[in-house]
Image (cartoon, rainbow over all chains, first blue to last red; front, side, top):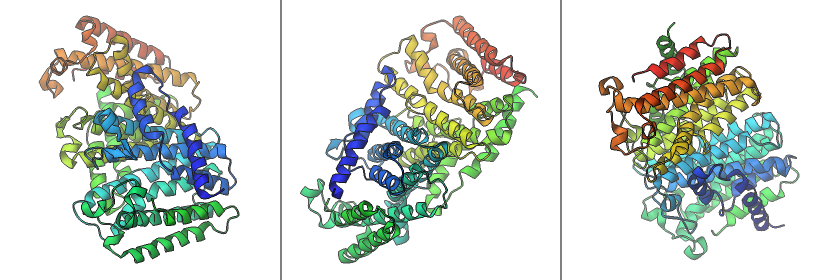
Length: 295
Length: 295
């Protein structure tokens, strides 16, 4: 199976599993849960979920054990998009061709839907019924640590402050490592937890983490390159948005060929971290696919 | 020791313990953590923390085991206040005589600070080092369930929708049971978990829950009465705010004497649920104190 098909099949599994977690528990809460489902269902490549599932498989765990953690990651990710799109943040009207959550439900419900969806994500992780207590607790702690102020949310803060004062290169790296990198790393680690690896010092968690950091960074570099060199029709969004907004990107510090080499080096590091494990072919393919993508 | 002193001593303990959880982990995150500390530290009666500590003590647990759960509850509560005060929600400029978070840090940082503070609260609960894995996991699951869409956040949604269409009495009850009641119940339950009670069907958890539901409802009824009959100088806020905003309250359905009787009945139910446990005198006093309060 090629990687594109594998991603599609995985996304279908996640789409099928998510609704059960997001059923309206009480008619009085219909609006809130509608808003939660609106953003959590029906879209995205589900890369984070894929990482959970693949690392669990790589280290001998079952799909049943990984799926709740995969759904948890996607809820947390979707929540961050709801809040990111709000008027006081990026003020976006559309995401993936759909109206953003607050354009449909209003700012107040969108705020609550983001709160409730991230809480649901954490709860799904803590309540994973197909793993041991130790794995569920490790999963909850990892997702909480990497989503929170030291992780994704911290990256969002650095990003906000960067609008006022252009970050230097180390700060740009830190921002990406947190803003998008943290959840990608957490996903790989949750895959390990689903496979029963709960000791933080286990070398498999370190290897998963190095892999995830590498593909996360390469992903961001390619994003910046596509904004300059990509085809708007293929991308499904306007190019040259970063320059228009005066955003600091990797291309503020290097030219496109250098950025491509940088992304290649990070991809190679990612592959080296997990390439010796039997069964890592899909993860290797994923890293290469993300490097070569045109959208 | 009288209940007022007990509350003050407990609040001091919480104020002393919280900062260690909210230290800035990285200079780039100073603004975010400043905003988190601004709302989490320095204020409030810390009733939720008190319930965690008292129920843990009642059922034979240590203060060391309860304190992290108590701090977790206060972070979750403080987060809900940050988001509640935002312009798209209640649009309040002051809380407890201090500027609200978004007035100091801006809407975007306030949004993130709320997100990061609630995540930190959940993380503190999941990472409680003074209890067993089973208790930490039970604590995390309880706090997540009662804070989330089925609990506090669901109550906030009902409250928002009630601005457009006045709730009937059952819906008013449901709103309060979730919006403020859920965290109060979770606090009592976390005290049980801290004392090692993790089985959801343990009658002590049920009793703690009945107690918390009773004092939570009485608290809300008294709030509504004080808005009509209270002394603005003692309350520290303007009275008759509910009528001005056209809010549905308990007094939309009954007169003040009937509301007082209702609050008394709920207080009695609360006391009956835990009165037979040796050592419940403080919790009985707390219920009576909350009923008789004038601010």
